[in-house]
Length: 412
View (tube, rainbow, N blue to C red):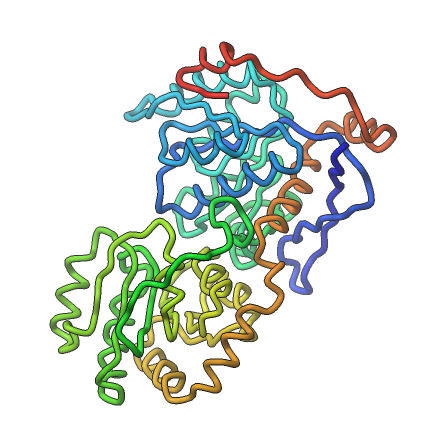
């Protein structure tokens, strides 16, 4: 028998969205869960979160599916007991209708208790299917700066990945009663097992950032700030891990800064922890960032952290207790703090220890348990009441492999 639990919520003083809380008070039956995405491509935070959730929920005894158009992580999911169903990519003006039709065929066979939609088109097509099929619909807002993010209101519950995102979505019209905050977590999941690898060899002192190479990540401000740092520490090196559409512009900016030979573009890495393991300082200069997973990876590796005080970053750093916060779009502030840390080894050691404190708060298990608590809120009242009276039920039948295959490429 698996223990599954009821949600408890709270509100902040300012009326922000309630935060889901895992409670061991009630034992519940396990659920059939579908994570629904447009795609499962590497390098996307919302995909990483969905994979971590799906694998951990299987480990907790739930029957879990990932339904998507295409993806790179199917093998990892299948190895960890997640059933994967792909039904091809959809484009053009009929995209929503095609997705809804394919998802209806899938749901008709799976008969899920809960669908967690992680992208806008997935959420809208799931809502259409709900006209004919009964299931709880939970949507997750991973990027509130997306102009279409307010369409995620179609869920019975709307998960936001930070309190800052919750406030933003409420301001954009989503009722507080629907909103639940579940902060991201990365530690302890199967996608990122405990790191035992060899650190990458870097030139020191090494300042590292891990991010997509586009303007929202504030890379230009970091490059300019690093050029100022080299006036005091000419031997310093900056390593940028990640790729993106503006890489050529940033490379040109690095050359123009006079520090081009000390700025290294390392490209995308699926697991950047081998680079983080060699970093003297980790910096994230984002202008917008709902709840960046790399902050948690840097904390896990014990990096002294400097990051912008925007969106979900302050909360991810314990509002300054787990790292140094600086104003966004401020090269001078970045240079000042990097210079301060490079000149104070004891401060770096203190920040390294602080980053590792309360590591359970950034675990995949905590994120998964709080997410399951939100799912339970969407179950029909009669089912919730029955579960309170009788915590164990007969397991649901497994979906036959041929039924999964009929949906168009699924594997069980």
